[in-house]
Image (cartoon, rainbow, N blue to C red; front, top):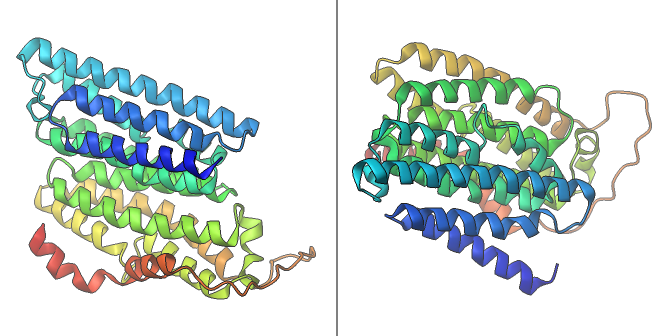
Length: 346
C-alpha cells in the first residue's frame, strides 16, 4: 500500500474517532463509527492474503450489524422521547439495544467471536489499531449514556468477558490471538465499573492502550507472531525482550507495575458500591488471564527452547530500540507511584 493511501486511511480513522467522541447527536456519532469502519477495512486486507480478506469480511459484517443496532436504538429512543441527544437515552428498550450494539463493536462476550479471528488475520500494526484506537468511539458512547444503562446486564457481560477472555486464551499459541483474548478480558474490567465511576473506565482504557501499544510495537520490531519464535527472539534485541517481559507482567496487573493501578481502583470502587461478591469473582477470574501472561513472559525470558529440537538462532541486530517504545515501556511499568495524584483527579 502506498504511503499516500495509508496516510488517508489513518487520517480518516482519527477523523471518525473525533466525530464520534465529540458529537451530541446520534446521527453524527453513527457517521463517525461508519467512517472508522470503512477506513480500517483496507488496512486489514492490505496483504491480500485469503486470511486477511476473510478477517476484513468478518469485521465489516459485524460492524455493519452493530452500526444498524446503534441507529435502531437511537431511532426508537427518538420516537418515544423526541430526543436525538446522546445523553438523553431514557427508553429501556433503546438502552438494551445500545448495550448489545456497543458490546458487539467492542467484542464483549457473547459478541466476542469475531475479534480473535480478525486480529489473527490482520497485520500487527493494524492489530494495534483494532485493539486500541477502534475501541475508543464505542467506549465514549458507553461513557455518555452510562447513567441510563442497565447495571445488571453490564455486570453480567463484564464478568462473562473476563471469564471467557481468560479461559479461551489459555491454549493459544498465536500471540495475536492471545492479545485478542487479553483485550476481551480488559474490556470486562472497564464495562463493570462504567456505571458507577465512568472516569475510572477512561483511566483503565488509557493505561490498557499504553501497555497494549508497547507490546504490539515490540512484537512488530522483533517480528514475532508465535510462541515458538518468541522463545528464540531473545538474540535479536535482548533489551526489547526485557521490556516485553515487564510490560506483559504489567498487563497481567501485578504490583508494583502500572497495570495493578486500575484493577486496584476498580475493586475498591466495587466494594464501595456494595458489590464485594462481583469484585471477588472478577478478581479470581483474572487469574486465568494471569496464567497466559506468565506463559508469554516465560517464553520471552527463556534463553533455550525446553526440548531437544534444534532451533536456528536469530542474528542480533544493531538497531537501537525506538524512543517511542522506550517511553511507552517506562510509563507501562512505572506509573503506580503517581496513584495518589490520579485519585485526586478521579
